[in-house]
Structure formats: structure tokens, C-alpha cells
Image (tube, rainbow, N blue to C red; front, side, top):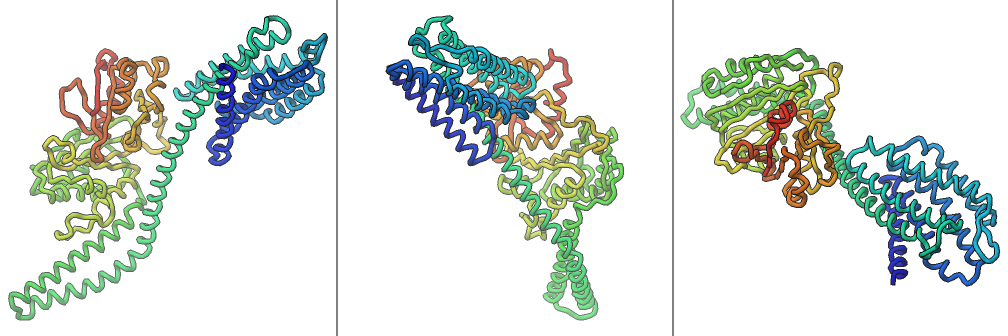
Length: 592
């Protein structure tokens, strides 16, 4: 029964090895899969000799033949298994000599088949002096090299890669030990209590390595899908830029012609209204003509602005606090009481174009007032490398569909009021032209009984030459396991130049790499439920969820309703928390 089970496992692992080879040849994901598949097939071939060929050998000559074949395959297995380990760990030192090592191993394998290594004496298998002089040192070198590659890379890999290497270490340890037992039995140092010790090691290693490679493949596949998503998004952005480029090339000419005709129409309409005796209906028609011309002029102006917003020829220091006050005083003097300003006492400088930035906030404030806002709150928060500016109102807000299309050109819900749908598109283009980001959040979706919109903008405070290491990772761990909204989370972090550690699975968390007193861990509800005992070690634990395009987080330490997970939350709660004493950071944050 045990022999049948071994035969089934051997056949299964052979199929798995073949699958890995075909998969890599087809997808070109990672060359380590191909060499692992080859190594696995060789191990299965060696096992086949132990469980099929050797038990059926009727005489010593057949046994000698199969032992020679077994060792010949083992010789070729050595460089291929070391090759896939080097590819897996990016260990370039051995990769350079791998082709020569394969050729040398093939030469030794051929030597085995000549009878120079293993022979027969008095009806027993015996090894020759050449076997002890050549093969045993090669085998010892292979064991030391494989362990060296794994252990050397353990200290400099990500948690997921460390887990893969640790499992390989266990698998190779079992394989080496059982191989040594067979070797000792062959040279007569110990008794052969089972048909083959190596069969046990090969099966154990094959199963462990196959499972961990399958997991590695799934992780790579998820990474490729994420990369494809980014490329798709970049392609869409490129299409939008190309469309703007084409629009910009033709807009100036079209705009000039439209203005000429509009000037004639508007002038004639005004002359007609002043000089001719018109009925009440006639006056209404003339006024409609003039109003329509004004709207067409505004639309033509917006189109021209849209085509030019990405071109910022000169940048100068701009104090955002001063800019906010100037925009409100100049453009909205009659509703100054509607504005509440926070964080304006300190100067907040960025490099930009005052005029274009002024247009951004004129658009945002205008939209808020047109949406019936009674209060508009403007807040500036600064960190080491960026300025975060939020504009929040209590207007009518928007639903999830409107939120998704908010920045699309020509999308408007105010067509009857003359809206062109270009204001927010121009706003985003100007902000991105300054190296910034803008994200909208609708308070209507939070189910708190609130309404209104909140725009959060981030601007870099430093130039590329002055930048230090803004990509330095922060004390935040983002667990990707089951996280469907991972792209939205990463976008929020990227907007405020915060780089969290990414781990594939909760099991990748350990106190050595991520001390509980220093790190905030972000997971979803499913991962929290499945690994609560492990996650309970972390006093700062965030559980995020996604509802109608918004992310939410609940902080138990404040006894408040769920908050929107936004750039402002990351800066004020997560990043600033890193600088607090550990004794003040021991609390549980759960996002729902």
C-alpha cells in the first residue's frame, strides 16, 4: 500500500514539474519556474528508479545499471536545482558559471555510465576510488552552496520571499539528510532498513517545494495583474494627453474663428436691442441670443484653457495660505462669512503658477456655492515633503456614479444652468501639472446623515534636486490577502508620498521584521477573522472596507463613527503616529 502511495505521489509530482515548465515557456513569468520543473522531473526520475526499477531487478548487473543511472541523473540534478535557487534569489555570483557547471555535471554523469564510479564485487554493489574522489566532494559542495545561497538571502528579502526560502531550507534539509542516509548505506556505514531513504526525502521536498512555488506563482500572477492594471491606466492617461494635444493644436484656430462670429452676432444683437422698437417677445429673443453667445464664449474659453493647463512654463514660490485668502477676498467678497480657514497662520510654499492655481480654487469654491453650500472649510496641513490642502463643503454633494465621473471632461449635472463639464477636468490637470494629486470624497455616501463634497489635494514642497529619500518606507504594513480594493489604498498612500510595506499574507507578519510596538497593520475583514489570534499581537490594527467608492476606517480609541480613509487620515493619524512615544500608541484601530 505504501509503495502504491509513493508511485501515485511520484506521478503527480512529475506532472507538476511538467506543468511548471510548460507554464513558464508559455507565460515567461519567471525562469526559476522552468528550472524548478526540470529539477522536480529529475527527482521523480530518481524516485522512479527506487520504487519501480530497483525492486524489479533480478540480478546484480541490473541493480548496478540502475544505480549508475540514478547517480547520473543526480549529477545533472545538482546544477539545475542550484540554477533555479539562484534565479529565485537573484544570486548572480553562481548564475555566471551555471552553463559551465551543467557541462561539467553532464561529463561526470557520462563517467558514471562507463562503470568508473560504481561497480560489482562478490555480488555486491561497490563504489570505486573515483567515486569517493570526485562525486562525494561535488555533492558536499552542492549541499554547502545551496545552503549558502538560501541563508545568505534570508536577511535581505521581503517577508514573502523569506517564507519561500525558509520552506526551501526545510525541504532541502530533509532531502540532504535522506540522501546522506542512502549514501552511508551504499558505502556500508549503516544498514539499508528501507528500500530507499531518498524516496522519502524526495517526496517531502517535492510536495513542499511545489506548494511554495504554486503560492509564488499566484503572487507573481497577482503582481502581473496589478502591473497590467497600472499599464492600462497609464495607456488611458496617454490617450487623454494625446487627445488634449490634438485639441490644443486645433483649439486656437477654432477659438479665433468662433470669437469672430460671436462678436458679430453679439454686436448685432445689442444694436438691434438698442436701436429697434421691439415687442416684449422680441426683447426676450434678443436677450436669449446675447446669453447664448456669452455661454458659447465661456465654453470656448474653457476649451482653450483645457488645452493649455498642462503647460506651465514658469514656476515661482507660491504661498498657498496667501493664495486662499486672496481668492476669497477678490472673487467672493460677498460670501466671506461662508469660509472657515484652518492652518493658514503658517506659510505653506510650493513651486507653481499663481494664476493657474488661483483658477483651481475659483472653480472649487464656485462649485461649492452653486451646490448650495452654507459653509466651506479650507484646511492646510504640512508634512516633511508635501502640503495637504482640503476643501470641504456642506452642499448637495453627489452619488457614487457622479463621484466616479467627476473629473471627466464634458460630464456635467448642470447643463440647464449652462455647465460645460470642464471646470473640474481643468482643475485636476492644473494640479497634476504642479506635480500634485486631487481626490474627491462624497459625504453623502458615509450614511452619517451628512451631505457635501470634500476635495483633498497634495502638492510637493520640494524640487526633484532637493528631494532626499521620499520613498523611504514608513511603519505601516499593508496585507494584500483578500484585499479587493488594494489599488484604491495604494493610490491614497502614493498621493501623500507614504510608502507602506506590502505583504502577501497575514502569515508573513512576524515580530522580527515588523515589531508590534512600531508598526500599524492594515487588513480586511476576512483576513482579520481568519487570523485574529496572530493579529491580536498588534495594538495598532486597521481593518478597511470599501463602500460605494469610499474607503472607511473606525478608530476604537475615539468612540466615533467610521471615518473616511483618505490622504488627510494617513497624514494626521498614521504618519504622525510614528513619531509618538510607544506608550501612547498602544491602541486598536479597526476600520469597518
